[in-house]
Length: 197
Image (tube, rainbow, N blue to C red):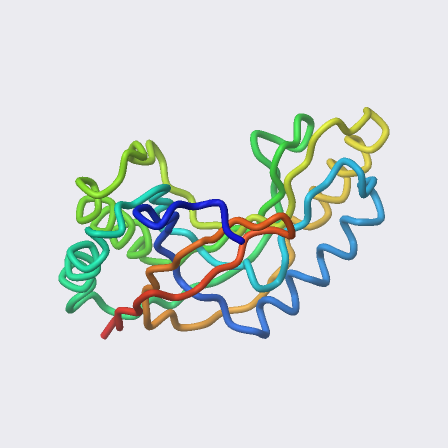
């Protein structure tokens, strides 16, 4: 049973990632597992790989239809994006890792433009503050309590992965996704999809 109440849903807005890129991300997770102790890492599952444009948090269920229309209007006429996934990094930095992620971006900065448009469209539907600086990425691991030897091994590996390529693709839809929390982890379901032309 999910932890959310019927009058509220937990949701986010994201771009899907192709299966071939997910394959490459899973391969790099295998490499990271060699230097990170399991007990200190929560690995992102394949079905949860996505490029988040905006985390909404709790949204009133009675406003979902209105939010869906606001997103449809925001995405209307926006061009499809030529995206690239490359490079592994850590937040805030490899020497103090809390999150490991893969960078996702486009050459023309249209991804950032789309994110700002969506941020503006959903502002009145969420209590989440606007992102100060958006960086396209997929989280691949959440890290806590690692010791210096593992941190040094991770930093060395991350440095070696700065040139890693995960693939290129055309993102042609934005998804409005519900996230339900269970003891086994989050389960995501697509509430609506909005085409990019």
